[in-house]
Length: 345
Ligand code: TLP
Image (cartoon, rainbow, N blue to C red; front, side, top):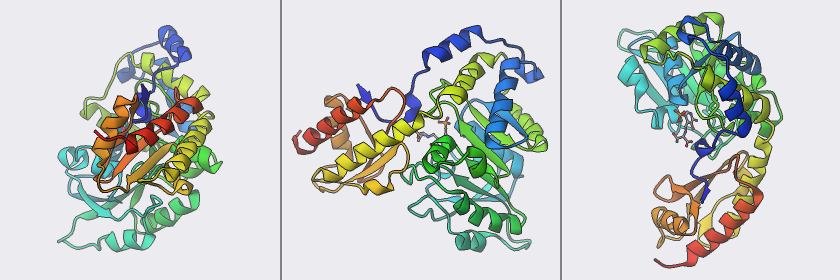
Protein backbone atom coordinates (compact mmCIF):
# COMPACT_ATOMS: atom_id res chain seq x y z
CA UNK A 1 0.00 0.00 0.00
CA UNK A 2 1.15 3.52 -0.81
CA UNK A 3 -0.54 5.46 1.96
CA UNK A 4 -0.90 9.15 1.12
CA UNK A 5 -3.85 9.85 3.43
CA UNK A 6 -1.74 11.87 5.86
CA UNK A 7 1.73 12.32 7.31
CA UNK A 8 0.20 11.11 10.58
CA UNK A 9 0.54 7.53 9.27
CA UNK A 10 4.35 7.68 9.53
CA UNK A 11 5.94 4.96 11.64
CA UNK A 12 8.70 5.56 14.18
CA UNK A 13 12.23 5.13 12.81
CA UNK A 14 14.55 2.38 14.15
CA UNK A 15 16.53 5.12 15.98
CA UNK A 16 13.31 6.23 17.69
CA UNK A 17 12.51 2.67 18.80
CA UNK A 18 16.00 2.36 20.22
CA UNK A 19 15.77 5.71 22.03
CA UNK A 20 12.35 4.77 23.46
CA UNK A 21 13.76 1.50 24.78
CA UNK A 22 16.67 3.22 26.48
CA UNK A 23 14.83 6.34 27.71
CA UNK A 24 15.50 7.48 31.25
CA UNK A 25 12.12 8.26 32.81
CA UNK A 26 10.42 9.72 35.90
CA UNK A 27 7.05 11.12 36.92
CA UNK A 28 6.41 14.02 34.56
CA UNK A 29 3.48 15.39 36.58
CA UNK A 30 6.12 16.06 39.25
CA UNK A 31 8.34 17.51 36.49
CA UNK A 32 10.78 14.65 37.11
CA UNK A 33 11.04 12.96 33.74
CA UNK A 34 14.49 13.91 32.45
CA UNK A 35 13.71 12.89 28.88
CA UNK A 36 10.52 14.98 28.76
CA UNK A 37 12.42 17.88 30.28
CA UNK A 38 15.11 17.59 27.65
CA UNK A 39 12.57 17.46 24.81
CA UNK A 40 10.79 20.52 26.20
CA UNK A 41 14.07 22.46 26.36
CA UNK A 42 14.95 21.48 22.79
CA UNK A 43 11.48 22.40 21.55
CA UNK A 44 11.51 25.82 23.21
CA UNK A 45 14.92 26.53 21.75
CA UNK A 46 13.89 25.46 18.24
CA UNK A 47 10.98 27.88 18.12
CA UNK A 48 12.69 30.63 20.10
CA UNK A 49 10.48 30.59 23.21
CA UNK A 50 11.36 30.46 26.92
CA UNK A 51 9.60 27.20 27.72
CA UNK A 52 7.62 24.29 26.30
CA UNK A 53 5.14 21.65 27.43
CA UNK A 54 4.81 18.12 26.05
CA UNK A 55 1.20 17.16 25.31
CA UNK A 56 -0.54 14.17 23.77
CA UNK A 57 -1.63 15.60 20.42
CA UNK A 58 -1.92 18.62 18.19
CA UNK A 59 -5.54 18.99 19.21
CA UNK A 60 -4.57 19.02 22.89
CA UNK A 61 -1.78 21.53 22.18
CA UNK A 62 -4.22 23.94 20.55
CA UNK A 63 -6.89 23.40 23.22
CA UNK A 64 -4.49 23.94 26.11
CA UNK A 65 -3.21 27.09 24.39
CA UNK A 66 -6.73 28.48 23.93
CA UNK A 67 -7.66 27.64 27.54
CA UNK A 68 -4.53 29.45 28.70
CA UNK A 69 -5.16 32.59 26.65
CA UNK A 70 -8.94 32.86 27.01
CA UNK A 71 -11.53 32.80 29.77
CA UNK A 72 -15.16 31.78 29.36
CA UNK A 73 -17.04 34.14 27.05
CA UNK A 74 -13.85 35.50 25.48
CA UNK A 75 -13.64 35.48 21.71
CA UNK A 76 -11.06 33.85 19.47
CA UNK A 77 -10.64 34.95 15.85
CA UNK A 78 -9.62 32.15 13.51
CA UNK A 79 -9.61 31.35 9.78
CA UNK A 80 -12.69 29.63 8.40
CA UNK A 81 -10.52 26.79 7.03
CA UNK A 82 -8.37 26.43 10.14
CA UNK A 83 -7.89 23.01 11.67
CA UNK A 84 -8.80 24.55 15.04
CA UNK A 85 -12.16 25.60 13.63
CA UNK A 86 -12.96 22.62 11.39
CA UNK A 87 -11.48 19.54 12.99
CA UNK A 88 -11.01 19.87 16.74
CA UNK A 89 -14.52 18.91 17.78
CA UNK A 90 -15.30 22.45 18.91
CA UNK A 91 -13.09 21.94 21.98
CA UNK A 92 -12.50 25.65 22.56
CA UNK A 93 -16.27 26.16 22.97
CA UNK A 94 -17.13 22.79 24.51
CA UNK A 95 -14.48 22.91 27.23
CA UNK A 96 -13.39 26.55 27.38
CA UNK A 97 -16.65 28.40 26.77
CA UNK A 98 -14.73 30.34 24.15
CA UNK A 99 -16.73 32.15 21.48
CA UNK A 100 -15.23 31.41 18.08
CA UNK A 101 -15.40 33.96 15.28
CA UNK A 102 -14.16 33.13 11.80
CA UNK A 103 -12.71 35.36 9.12
CA UNK A 104 -12.07 34.02 5.59
CA UNK A 105 -8.82 32.21 4.94
CA UNK A 106 -7.27 33.40 1.70
CA UNK A 107 -6.17 30.64 -0.71
CA UNK A 108 -2.57 31.09 0.52
CA UNK A 109 -3.61 30.31 4.10
CA UNK A 110 -3.37 33.88 5.33
CA UNK A 111 -5.97 36.09 6.99
CA UNK A 112 -6.40 39.63 5.66
CA UNK A 113 -5.24 42.03 8.39
CA UNK A 114 -8.21 44.29 7.57
CA UNK A 115 -10.62 41.36 8.12
CA UNK A 116 -9.01 40.59 11.47
CA UNK A 117 -9.15 44.23 12.51
CA UNK A 118 -12.82 44.48 11.52
CA UNK A 119 -13.60 41.39 13.62
CA UNK A 120 -12.07 42.82 16.81
CA UNK A 121 -14.85 44.01 19.11
CA UNK A 122 -14.98 47.37 20.79
CA UNK A 123 -15.36 47.37 24.57
CA UNK A 124 -19.11 47.16 25.00
CA UNK A 125 -21.25 45.24 27.45
CA UNK A 126 -23.07 43.55 24.56
CA UNK A 127 -19.98 41.94 23.06
CA UNK A 128 -17.68 39.10 23.96
CA UNK A 129 -14.14 40.24 24.66
CA UNK A 130 -11.81 39.70 21.69
CA UNK A 131 -8.83 37.92 23.22
CA UNK A 132 -6.98 35.79 20.70
CA UNK A 133 -6.12 35.47 17.01
CA UNK A 134 -5.04 32.02 15.83
CA UNK A 135 -3.01 31.36 12.67
CA UNK A 136 -1.96 28.05 11.10
CA UNK A 137 1.42 27.31 9.47
CA UNK A 138 1.65 25.37 7.25
CA UNK A 139 -2.00 25.70 6.42
CA UNK A 140 -3.47 22.23 6.05
CA UNK A 141 -6.71 22.98 4.19
CA UNK A 142 -5.05 25.64 2.08
CA UNK A 143 -2.88 23.00 0.44
CA UNK A 144 0.01 23.06 2.90
CA UNK A 145 0.70 26.75 2.22
CA UNK A 146 3.66 28.16 4.15
CA UNK A 147 3.01 31.56 5.74
CA UNK A 148 6.04 33.85 5.66
CA UNK A 149 7.26 35.85 8.65
CA UNK A 150 5.98 38.99 6.89
CA UNK A 151 2.51 37.54 6.43
CA UNK A 152 2.39 36.53 10.09
CA UNK A 153 3.66 39.97 11.12
CA UNK A 154 0.86 41.70 9.22
CA UNK A 155 -1.79 39.95 11.33
CA UNK A 156 0.15 39.82 14.61
CA UNK A 157 0.75 43.58 14.49
CA UNK A 158 -3.00 44.23 14.22
CA UNK A 159 -3.78 41.76 17.02
CA UNK A 160 -1.14 43.16 19.36
CA UNK A 161 -2.10 46.77 18.63
CA UNK A 162 -5.57 45.93 19.96
CA UNK A 163 -4.26 44.02 22.98
CA UNK A 164 -5.08 40.54 21.61
CA UNK A 165 -2.69 37.62 21.78
CA UNK A 166 -1.58 35.43 18.91
CA UNK A 167 -1.47 31.63 18.85
CA UNK A 168 0.21 29.83 15.99
CA UNK A 169 -0.97 26.31 15.20
CA UNK A 170 2.40 25.22 13.88
CA UNK A 171 1.52 21.53 13.61
CA UNK A 172 3.77 21.54 10.50
CA UNK A 173 5.90 24.60 11.29
CA UNK A 174 9.09 22.77 10.32
CA UNK A 175 7.65 22.08 6.87
CA UNK A 176 7.08 25.83 6.56
CA UNK A 177 10.59 26.59 7.82
CA UNK A 178 12.22 24.19 5.34
CA UNK A 179 10.08 25.41 2.43
CA UNK A 180 10.85 29.08 3.14
CA UNK A 181 14.49 28.51 4.13
CA UNK A 182 14.13 30.28 7.49
CA UNK A 183 14.42 29.02 11.08
CA UNK A 184 11.15 28.00 12.74
CA UNK A 185 11.96 30.58 15.43
CA UNK A 186 11.64 33.35 12.82
CA UNK A 187 8.14 32.15 11.92
CA UNK A 188 7.14 31.88 15.58
CA UNK A 189 8.76 35.16 16.67
CA UNK A 190 5.56 37.18 16.91
CA UNK A 191 3.34 34.44 18.28
CA UNK A 192 2.62 34.53 22.02
CA UNK A 193 2.23 30.75 21.85
CA UNK A 194 3.08 28.19 19.21
CA UNK A 195 2.24 24.51 19.02
CA UNK A 196 3.88 21.91 16.82
CA UNK A 197 3.53 18.19 16.23
CA UNK A 198 6.12 15.43 16.44
CA UNK A 199 3.85 12.78 14.98
CA UNK A 200 3.25 14.17 11.50
CA UNK A 201 6.12 14.65 9.06
CA UNK A 202 8.65 14.23 11.87
CA UNK A 203 7.47 10.60 12.28
CA UNK A 204 7.40 10.24 16.06
CA UNK A 205 4.59 7.99 17.27
CA UNK A 206 2.91 10.45 19.67
CA UNK A 207 3.11 13.99 20.89
CA UNK A 208 3.06 17.72 20.37
CA UNK A 209 4.59 20.71 22.11
CA UNK A 210 3.11 23.97 23.31
CA UNK A 211 5.72 26.72 23.52
CA UNK A 212 5.65 30.22 25.02
CA UNK A 213 6.87 32.32 27.95
CA UNK A 214 7.67 30.73 31.34
CA UNK A 215 4.51 32.26 32.75
CA UNK A 216 2.33 31.01 29.88
CA UNK A 217 3.71 27.48 30.10
CA UNK A 218 3.20 27.34 33.89
CA UNK A 219 -0.48 28.11 33.32
CA UNK A 220 -0.66 25.75 30.33
CA UNK A 221 0.65 22.96 32.60
CA UNK A 222 -2.37 23.48 34.85
CA UNK A 223 -4.72 23.39 31.85
CA UNK A 224 -3.06 20.23 30.55
CA UNK A 225 -3.89 18.63 33.91
CA UNK A 226 -7.51 19.81 33.62
CA UNK A 227 -7.95 18.05 30.26
CA UNK A 228 -6.41 14.88 31.67
CA UNK A 229 -3.15 15.31 29.79
CA UNK A 230 -0.75 14.98 32.73
CA UNK A 231 1.26 11.90 31.76
CA UNK A 232 3.64 10.04 34.00
CA UNK A 233 6.68 8.20 32.55
CA UNK A 234 6.16 10.02 29.27
CA UNK A 235 9.89 10.03 28.57
CA UNK A 236 9.32 6.81 26.61
CA UNK A 237 7.39 8.95 24.14
CA UNK A 238 9.53 12.07 24.46
CA UNK A 239 12.62 10.03 23.53
CA UNK A 240 11.20 9.50 20.04
CA UNK A 241 10.43 13.21 19.87
CA UNK A 242 14.05 14.08 20.57
CA UNK A 243 15.14 11.89 17.65
CA UNK A 244 12.44 13.57 15.54
CA UNK A 245 13.86 17.03 16.26
CA UNK A 246 17.45 15.91 15.77
CA UNK A 247 17.09 13.82 12.62
CA UNK A 248 13.80 14.31 10.82
CA UNK A 249 13.55 18.02 10.03
CA UNK A 250 16.01 18.45 7.16
CA UNK A 251 14.62 15.47 5.25
CA UNK A 252 11.21 17.22 4.94
CA UNK A 253 12.65 18.78 1.75
CA UNK A 254 12.34 15.32 0.14
CA UNK A 255 8.64 15.21 0.99
CA UNK A 256 8.18 18.64 -0.57
CA UNK A 257 9.95 17.57 -3.77
CA UNK A 258 7.79 14.44 -3.95
CA UNK A 259 4.64 16.49 -3.43
CA UNK A 260 5.66 18.84 -6.25
CA UNK A 261 6.36 15.87 -8.54
CA UNK A 262 2.92 14.45 -7.77
CA UNK A 263 1.20 17.81 -8.33
CA UNK A 264 2.96 18.37 -11.66
CA UNK A 265 1.83 14.95 -12.88
CA UNK A 266 -1.75 15.47 -11.64
CA UNK A 267 -1.90 18.78 -13.56
CA UNK A 268 -1.28 16.76 -16.76
CA UNK A 269 -3.99 14.15 -16.11
CA UNK A 270 -7.22 14.96 -18.01
CA UNK A 271 -10.15 15.13 -15.58
CA UNK A 272 -8.02 16.30 -12.63
CA UNK A 273 -6.98 19.84 -11.80
CA UNK A 274 -4.32 21.53 -9.68
CA UNK A 275 -1.93 24.44 -10.04
CA UNK A 276 1.36 22.76 -9.08
CA UNK A 277 2.96 26.15 -8.33
CA UNK A 278 0.75 26.38 -5.25
CA UNK A 279 2.30 23.23 -3.76
CA UNK A 280 4.96 24.51 -1.36
CA UNK A 281 5.23 21.69 1.15
CA UNK A 282 3.98 18.09 1.57
CA UNK A 283 0.23 18.52 1.00
CA UNK A 284 -1.35 18.16 -2.44
CA UNK A 285 -5.02 19.12 -2.69
CA UNK A 286 -6.43 18.50 -6.15
CA UNK A 287 -9.81 18.71 -7.80
CA UNK A 288 -11.77 16.21 -9.82
CA UNK A 289 -12.88 18.35 -12.75
CA UNK A 290 -14.85 15.59 -14.49
CA UNK A 291 -18.42 15.91 -13.11
CA UNK A 292 -19.08 12.23 -13.87
CA UNK A 293 -16.46 11.15 -11.34
CA UNK A 294 -16.77 11.77 -7.60
CA UNK A 295 -13.71 12.07 -5.35
CA UNK A 296 -15.10 9.18 -3.26
CA UNK A 297 -15.26 6.97 -6.35
CA UNK A 298 -11.74 7.96 -7.42
CA UNK A 299 -10.52 7.17 -3.91
CA UNK A 300 -12.14 3.70 -4.10
CA UNK A 301 -10.55 2.99 -7.49
CA UNK A 302 -7.14 4.10 -6.17
CA UNK A 303 -7.49 1.80 -3.19
CA UNK A 304 -8.00 -1.11 -5.57
CA UNK A 305 -4.70 -0.01 -7.20
CA UNK A 306 -2.90 -0.03 -3.84
CA UNK A 307 -2.91 3.74 -3.29
CA UNK A 308 -4.68 5.44 -0.39
CA UNK A 309 -5.79 9.04 -1.00
CA UNK A 310 -8.80 10.45 0.84
CA UNK A 311 -11.52 12.74 -0.50
CA UNK A 312 -11.75 15.94 1.56
CA UNK A 313 -14.49 17.99 -0.04
CA UNK A 314 -17.25 17.53 -2.55
CA UNK A 315 -14.83 17.88 -5.50
CA UNK A 316 -11.41 17.47 -3.89
CA UNK A 317 -8.92 14.90 -2.60
CA UNK A 318 -5.82 15.36 -0.45
CA UNK A 319 -2.53 13.49 -0.82
CA UNK A 320 0.25 13.95 1.74
CA UNK A 321 3.88 12.91 1.25
CA UNK A 322 6.01 11.77 4.18
CA UNK A 323 8.81 9.62 5.56
CA UNK A 324 8.50 6.13 4.06
CA UNK A 325 7.23 7.46 0.72
CA UNK A 326 10.03 7.51 -1.84
CA UNK A 327 10.10 9.00 -5.32
CA UNK A 328 9.38 5.52 -6.78
CA UNK A 329 6.19 5.33 -4.72
CA UNK A 330 5.07 8.68 -6.13
CA UNK A 331 5.78 7.47 -9.67
CA UNK A 332 3.67 4.38 -8.94
CA UNK A 333 0.89 6.53 -7.45
CA UNK A 334 0.91 8.71 -10.60
CA UNK A 335 0.50 5.63 -12.81
CA UNK A 336 -2.35 4.43 -10.56
CA UNK A 337 -4.04 7.84 -10.77
CA UNK A 338 -3.86 7.82 -14.58
CA UNK A 339 -5.49 4.38 -14.67
CA UNK A 340 -8.08 5.17 -11.99
CA UNK A 341 -9.34 8.32 -13.73
CA UNK A 342 -10.21 6.42 -16.90
CA UNK A 343 -11.22 3.00 -15.50
CA UNK A 344 -14.97 2.60 -14.97
CA UNK A 345 -16.43 0.92 -11.88
N1 TLP B 1 -4.46 17.04 11.05
C1 TLP B 1 -4.83 15.72 10.57
C2 TLP B 1 -6.35 15.56 10.53
O1 TLP B 1 -6.94 15.88 11.73
C3 TLP B 1 -7.00 16.36 9.44
C4 TLP B 1 -4.25 15.50 9.20
O2 TLP B 1 -4.31 14.35 8.74
O3 TLP B 1 -3.73 16.46 8.60
N2 TLP B 1 -3.32 21.29 13.46
C5 TLP B 1 -3.19 20.95 12.16
C6 TLP B 1 -2.83 22.01 11.18
C7 TLP B 1 -3.39 19.62 11.76
O4 TLP B 1 -3.28 19.32 10.47
C8 TLP B 1 -3.71 18.65 12.73
C9 TLP B 1 -3.95 17.21 12.34
C10 TLP B 1 -3.84 19.05 14.07
C11 TLP B 1 -3.63 20.39 14.39
C12 TLP B 1 -4.22 18.10 15.17
O5 TLP B 1 -3.26 17.16 15.45
P1 TLP B 1 -3.63 15.76 16.17
O6 TLP B 1 -4.19 14.89 15.09
O7 TLP B 1 -2.32 15.31 16.72
O8 TLP B 1 -4.61 16.05 17.24
